[in-house]
Amino acid sequence: MRLKHRLFYTAALLTGSTSAFVSPHQRTNLHNSKHNIERNILHIRGGDIISNMPSSSSALFSVITPVTEALTHALVSGTPLHAIGALYAVASLTVVPLTYYRTGYSFSVGYGLSVAAMSAALLSSFPKQTLSAPPILALTSLVYGLRLAAFIFVRERTVESKRKVFDEMNKKPVLQRTPLALGVALLYAFMVSPVLFALRGTLEAGSLLEKVQVFFTGLAAFGMVLESVADLHKYEVKRQSKDGDEKFVGPTTWSYKLCRHPNYLGEILHWFGLFGAGSVSFGKSIAGWTCGGLGLFGILSIMMGASSRLDTKQSEKYGGQPAYDEWKGKVTSSVIPFIK
Image (cartoon, rainbow, N blue to C red; front, side):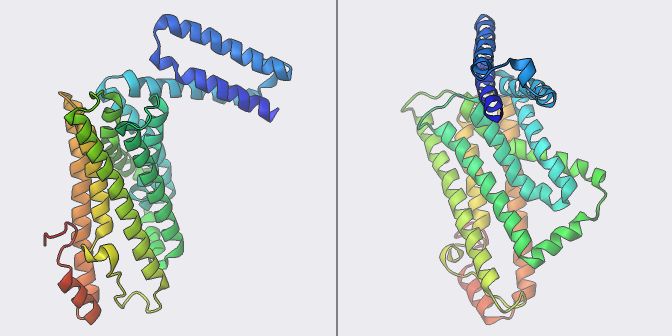
């Protein structure tokens, strides 16, 4: 029975997800074909759709299918604002429940998972483009979000100081967290919107714009790797330290010789690369330039502000300790290398 339902869902979803790409006449034929597939699959195993599908599953399926089709239609062929609105819906459905669970998840675990969810929605809505920059960009964004969410979750569970910070932020009544969740979800949708335009756009093979897109896609991937390595490096150094949280233990090697916050640098490079790769497909779209620009400006402002606050916190906490003073004297850049 379970295999039967799984086969049915797979066939139905495959046929349903393609309906946004065909003409009305073709859609009618596709619908008939879909019905025949459903009937034949269930006939092989015995029975029919009504008698073999549990009523709860049937009801859920009847709700999910129109929603996914509407989402795909908005992303693929809707106006730019409708498409960005669809991204916002995905981000909100991800961030709001997580924020209700823990307020701090709105800009941590929820941040990563919403980026991953939007990227997954984009990858499933557009036809595969093997070895082209746009799907690679979307895949990079997907991996980025999943990695970040997993890292922050593990860090919260294993580092006592981080857990206390999350607990302190979790005192606000649940429903009063809604504006925060919806606000950050909108920012995340704006940040991912360049990936949408990259997938919707068509660039001439071998053209300068395509080469620019490839370059920025590589930059986004490089930023993701840099942030991942820097995050893991700092986590391991702090976790293995036996001197508590009052003594400076670094890290001071590898990417931490480049600047004091290479994880923030990696995040900036990732989002700058995403914006650059998508901007070549903005064209004259006001929505593209406005939403993508606001998303980039938002994350850059957050990163620069966070690095400044962390520098101040570290100076107050570790200032006067020889190890910290020596490292800060050698590594004069906070985030951007060669810029104090």
